[in-house]
Length: 230
Length: 255
Image 1: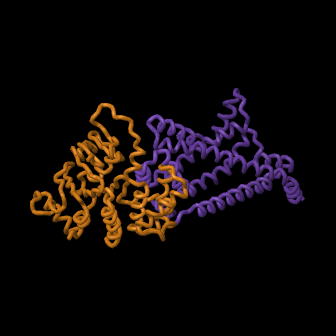
Image 2: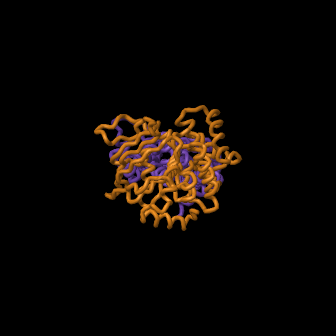
Image 3: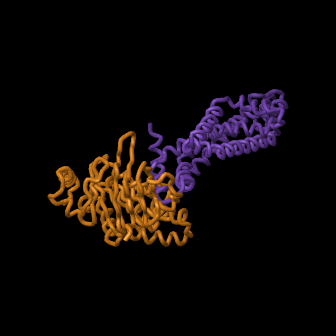
């Protein structure tokens, strides 16, 4: 039977699915990590920066939010072919910076929703602006940013599938290999892959929810919720 | 004796409107001064000019011999504003407690981050002030779960812990429900009697009468009167002042 032989192949291909899944998770963490590291200074520049800093941050954000992921991947990989960038580096730049652009807006929104009196109070006890951002603004902003940030996570775990176009062997690429070896049983193989992505997204969102609860401050969440009112 | 705080000829413009038009006053150590006046006359702005949270265009501020602000010279000397602000406590109308920190966290933050105290010493120091405002049992509570009156007392403790030379109170009771005003005023009265130097913007006429050494009456960016309460509340005051005092006495029950 074709189906049962298909199931056999899937069963026998588990190391490929597993390795693809692990790669997908690693890529997701890498891209999101690059995203956070770049997004925080970008958002701070947009809010607290001088004119030129504000402008550059905005240009960065608009460009990387305004281009399709595939275009970015092609630009960084094929576009920079002369520089001999590896697929992983190209993918990390394209997807990481793209995520940074989105994340910068998450952090910007979170920071702007913090009452301006917080900064005034911090300055009034003699904190420098940088120290106030570190000790007062960011700890609050991060908590407010977790719910919208989970969204970015959910997008990213799925968007890792794009990078198969530059030749990274992640879950999608492994799926193609399995399909090739399974006499073209695409429906079955891609269904399995779909289930894996669903599972990963679900687990991630579950963990984010736990983190959000763990970091919650009594009475503070409601202040954040008020921000989300229309 | 040199005054502790010397404010000279402050001028500040907002949107083309002159909010402060040449304000000068001095404070001796241990003084309590109350600034009153109709709304929009720059009372809060004046407080913020004292520690330069607001930047005036003109004027000079000297705190305990240190130049805080000097717009009278072409090139201002280098001023470590953060160091100066750490010596000037500030209590806000909306409390502005750090929402992500407990009561203890709020009071220790400046000690560890600005004064560089060790955590253990900071906690010890903070507890003295938290106790002083009567909230020792709430030290682990978060601001959002405290009443307005409790939050304002925490913010006073936060200011006190820094060992300020002067505390600026910016309408500390205006955002409070009437039944919570008393607990904050009580703390303020206690501080004034213990010799804290306090500059308060408030409509609490009762407080002004009982503890203020002098009242500064601001109107349209100018000092209309600067005198002890008994003089201001006597019938010798100008008609403008008497009308205003009568109005707020009705509103806030000054008697």
